[in-house]
Figure 1 (cartoon, rainbow, N blue to C red):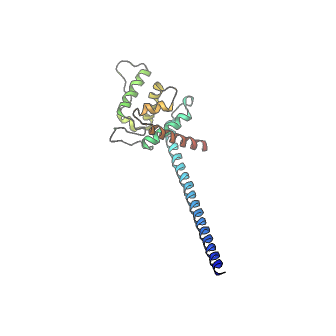
Figure 2 (cartoon, one colour):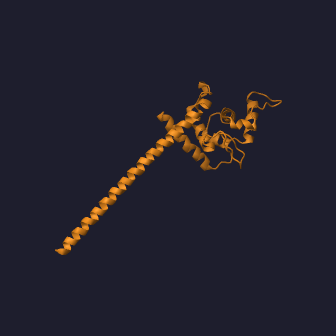
Figure 3 (cartoon, rainbow, N blue to C red):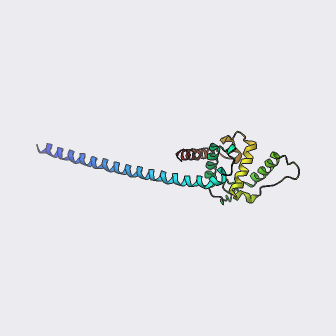
Length: 189
């Protein structure tokens, strides 16, 4: 009889221990979930601020007839990957600068294509200089000129290759990851 009592007592203690362990795990899981939701809300708020920040430069300065929401969201994703929306960003190793992290050769190509676009053959007109890379509006213009001529159907993959020709697949995946985040935000606005 004593053995049965000791067994039952140990059994009840074990059940109590596992019940307390289960309750602790549930509490911890709820706390983690609460912080995850909080972190997602903070991230959403930060991304929404970034969208609002660029709205004047990209949406409001683009004629309605050529505005493309998907293309705008793609550009936001590219900017997020390149500079995290810092128009003064400089990559010391590559020489890329500005919000789009534009290389000096990109500036030359934008000028060349702009001249072709407006049929300026002789005495090439250089409307962009290296310092234009730090100007959000002019950086966006360079990006648009290059894509208008080389990527008229606005393919995201082509735009990624035009912008960063030596990029590996992780780069394109990262841009598309941010594109999907911005798309989700835009659907909730």
